[in-house]
Every structure is written in structure tokens, then in C-alpha cells.
Length: 330
Figure (cartoon, rainbow, N blue to C red):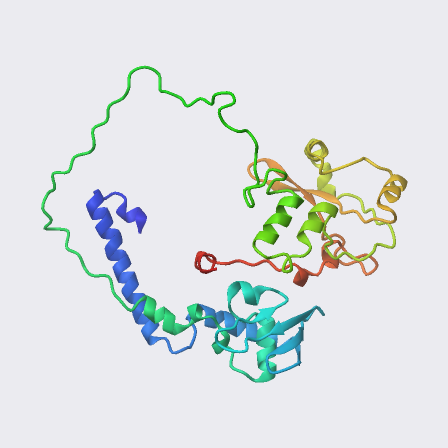
């Protein structure tokens, strides 16, 4: 649409965009009026998929509004349904709280309780709200018979000589840096003290209890204890361009993200026991480069050794995507 309008004069360009949006607004209004589901179509389609996934889960009820749901992978989630329309449900996966709609675990519990799922959605997902948004149409405007205006651009005078630059006088301003969250000067926003202050300021310490400890001492990603050392050879692709591999390793060493090199005995002494490695490989990177890869999914079919990725429970690390409307509402 913009590509078609950008070649027009300014007034007709705006008119083209306005008429396009006017027609689009009307079509959505008609679609909302004809919709017979209690929630918007896009969310209704997603709900049908989650109902299918919820049937594979096991739900155990504690009361008419609470229960425990076990996923296919064996992870348990405590679900608390809202007691009334003014309350909001909760789930350990946090999708329920963040997206303001029942997650798949809440869907499984609602199916167990034989309750309707649509009433538990936030009002912003309902068809009623959708119709209210498009209840008023955009009025048509005729721009073909407008009178010419006498507006002129503002006059601009360029100063003579070099452009003046703002200079900071020594001692005229304080150079002390402050935390952008709490305003104190004894820490920064990115260090552990800054995170602790931010969590206290917004009362989120109980919701995210592991952030400060993770920044200070390292995060526990859920890997089980390794009982034997596993050092596989690098993939054959790593030998196609040894310079790329060496350059990448040197870069990581210089940045402090790598340490070593170590022998097997030195590494076991440093980490306090057996360890597991992931092989290095190279993948073609257009037009003529290589992408450095540490294959954490190797080995794939070894009954005696599981890969690093296979040992991490993905359900314990949910990733949430939200639209701008949800962010503004919160």
C-alpha cells in the first residue's frame, strides 16, 4: 500500500492511505459483526490447538478453582483459576498472567472440571470488545475540491562561520553515574545490586527469585550431574577452514568467554569432576564465509550419552512473546 502511494503528491498520498484504512476498517467491522464465537477468531483458532495439546496432559483437581497439571514431559504446574470476573488466574508457567488468557495447563484443568474456557479470557480478547473497537466508521473525505492554501515554509537563515558546538566545561557538571532504576550511585542497572534494587522497586522479588543469585553465582539450567567424561571429536567440517576456528576461539578467549586450554585432568580438577564437551563444526555462510557452531545437540542417537540440549527441560524455560497492546495495557 505504501509503495503505491509514495509516488503521489503529499495530499493525494495521505488521501490514498486514508481511503485504504477506511475500507480496511469497514471490512473488519463487518467481520466482527458476523463473528459468532465469544472470542476473536485468531485466538479461537489458537485455543483449538491448545485444547488438543491439553488432552495429552494429566490434571488433578484440588478445588473448583485450583489443581495440578502434569505435562507430557513430566513437569508439574500449579494452576489457580479466578474466583470471580474481577480476579485473574495464575499458572507456574506464567503465560496465564502475562498474556491474560488461559494457558494450555489451565485449559487442561478447565476440561477436567468440565467448565467453559471462553469466560476465563480477559475482556480484550472478547468479540464484544472487538465490535466496540470498530463500532464507529471513518468518515469519507473529498480532497478533489479543496481550496489552495497560502501557507509557505518557514524562513531559514544559516549563521556565518563554523557551526557552534556545545562544550562541557571542566567541573561544571557532575560526572557521577547513577542507576537508571533507583537513582543511587553505588551500583549500575546491569549489575546484581541494580537488579536487586529494580526487583524491590517494582515488588517482583518473589516472582523472579533466582535472577540476583544467578547473576552473582551463575544460573542453574537444570543439567543433571555428569558421572563420566565425554569428549567427542570435532565434526569433519571443522577441518575445512582451521583459520576460522582458531580466530573464533582466540576472540572468545580475549573476551573472557572461553578459558584454557586444559588437559582432561586439569579440566576435571577445575570443574570438580567429570565433564561433557560439544563438538565444533562449520556451516557455510553466504556469500563465502563460515558460521562457527558448537553442536550442543550431539550425540543424537547414543543410548549411553545424552546431548546437552536433550538434558535440558524446555518446559522449564518458557519464552513469552507479547504484542504492543498487551505491553501498553500492563
